[in-house]
Image 1 (cartoon, helix red, strand yellow):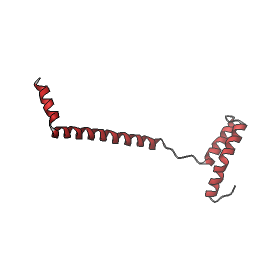
Image 2: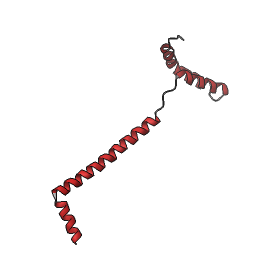
Image 3: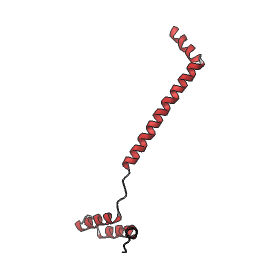
Image 4: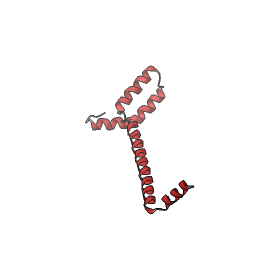
Length: 96
């Protein structure tokens, strides 16, 4: 019974309430900051640079020669990579 009275008096004290709310806010802030840093770190770790179109084309050509990519798939991929390949050639000062 005495413990309950002490707790009730503690929660009635404005300074104690302020300290409790301040502590709760600090804990929530720290957990939130930790979560944001963790999520951003995972997102940055998962990002990989986009492969160069010429490298992709070489790999697809190799898979096609091994029979793992059909003629139709090869033509489709080649058609879709063509603008990127041309852009890369222009960036390198080449024509093609």
